[in-house]
Structure formats: C-alpha cells, structure tokens
Length: 72
Image (tube, rainbow, N blue to C red):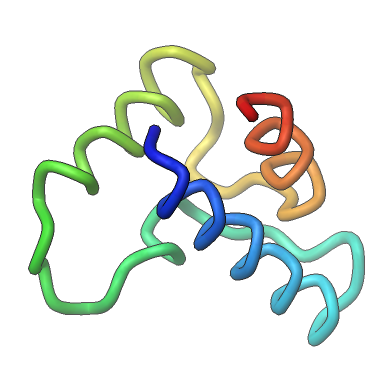
C-alpha cells in the first residue's frame, strides 16, 4: 500500500478511537468515501485485509492501526 493510504488508515483509526474508545471496530470501507472513485485502491486495501491477513469484516481500529504502522 502506498504512503498516502497508510496515512489515511492511521488517521481514520485515530479518529474512530478518539470518538468511540479503544474497542471500536471498523471495516476497510471506513477508509473510502461512499463514492467508488478509486476502485483500484479499494481492491488493494481489500486484498491486504481479506486475502493477505484473513481479517474479519470488522476489526478493532487499534489492531489495524498497529498492523499498518508495521508496514512502514
């Protein structure tokens, strides 16, 4: 994943955690607008989430943040 989407994922996770606490869950759709304006990037994140890591549809934001930070 590129640095832009990694930053976006961390930003969204931080916002969700700040708003709802450390146990908040989210799906990979949380990192995209309701409009499908970048299907290639959506599929890249879906591939990482579903195929590579075999994550459930909803995962803890804290877990995803740490996993993404490890990519850097």
